[in-house]
Image 1 (cartoon, rainbow, N blue to C red):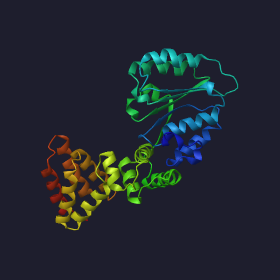
Image 2: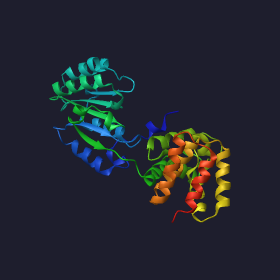
Image 3: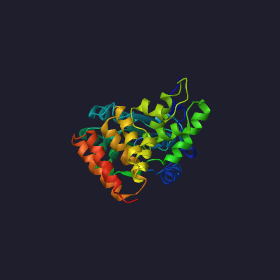
Image 4: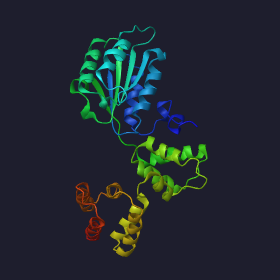
Length: 306
């Protein structure tokens, strides 16, 4: 059984969802022989690696001149001195330049990045780098300055829901609309994670709903969190506590529960609500993660203006 993430990986820029402005820039790069080194940065599952692969397929018509590496597997200086340097030295025929795609570049040691900077300088005439990272700050500043930096942002939930529904229909996966909504919400803007969760319930013999997704992921359902918040804002404390107690009895990690409250509440743009949740989050991070902390939060929410 093939991985759904690979089966449905876009092959064309027109199939990539989210980050429209970045994709337009990359489409323009196809026509630019003088393309600079590129640094793709942003959260996981936002299309960085996929975009690099598509760009490579459009620019280089011979895979012999494309080197793909994952720096989390080969993060030391040796891979720069051997694999990357040897590839950069190789003569290229019939292509504008050789291309090195280095995924998870923020995993590389400082020594490896320093060595790579030198390679980027020496072989800049006929070799280009596409560096991919989640944490821009872990990339050596002299490397940052040698690259055009493209920021990939989290994909909107409605766009991910649309793509997930396409896969559900094609793969005939049994899941409710609430299940899809929960799945996408828990993935938090990460399309790859959404598809991975979908794969985990692909062969279940029953229809998956929001409760199934919570059980599979071990994370509290955002739909239940929304219900708790709505009841609190409506001053229906008994129903809110009933829903919360049921959630607590399922042994979810308190840090996951408070994170879910924060993610759901972000969409309300209610400063006082977010402040109350943030203060509780700090207490839980410090190790004060009892049920009483949440009851205290609920008391604060009862007094928050809508």
